Figure 1 (cartoon, rainbow, N blue to C red):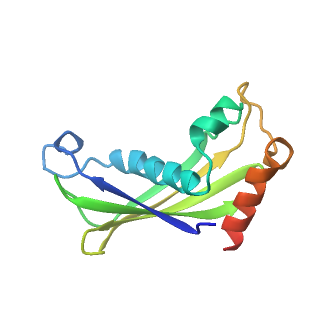
Figure 2 (figure 1 turned 135 degrees about the vertical axis):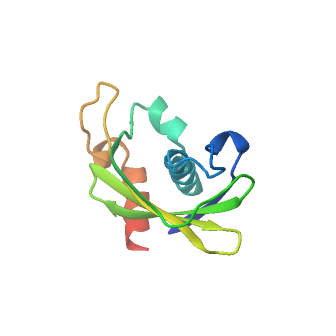
Length: 139
């Protein structure tokens, strides 16, 4: 079981603003990339979950920007499971530059819902994935 995954991204020119700094909204997309890789590292995938009718909408997102990132910077998005109770799951993120400096931190909270957007308990619908999240929380 992976406690933490690391996703590498390179800041594209289109992701920067007039000041040459990565636009703040990109961090949310980079958090998603990290979360997707974390789930993939458990042997599962977002696509698989959605095909089975399990969705993970974002309930809350937080980001703290500590240092500016710029075009062509290589960033590592460290993602770890922060909490899980069977209905909700949260992840923490740390964005580091190639030298290991912390550039940003964040978190997202999600709910497990059906395609009709009704909350669902993951243990009932996917006991195998429930165990993965429990182990990730305890790791």
